[in-house]
Length: 98
Image (cartoon, rainbow, N blue to C red; front, side):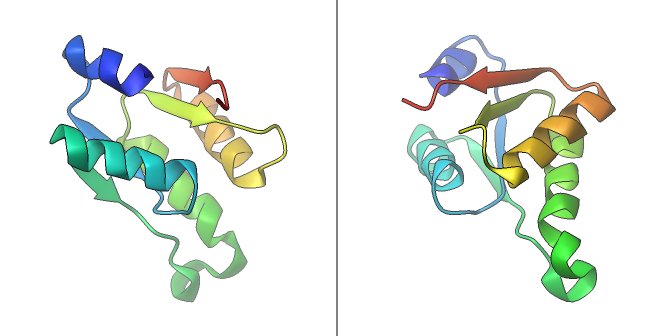
């Protein structure tokens, strides 16, 4: 797993997650099991309305030194995170779905 490799290389000290079902939940579980600091940022719909997930994604990316994405090529949320990573100049890795 890519997270294990980054941790072993000393290149991972925190997982920042959006707290969503699916990959976010898997990454959060991995962080807890590995003893890695976890920060979960959830969308604030009261403050940002329908744009809340995109605002949250930009916040996640702004806190990240490296962005790991698992994308099905359909998710608009993952695309939003990818675009934020590119805009902010963050290294970005697209990981396989399996």
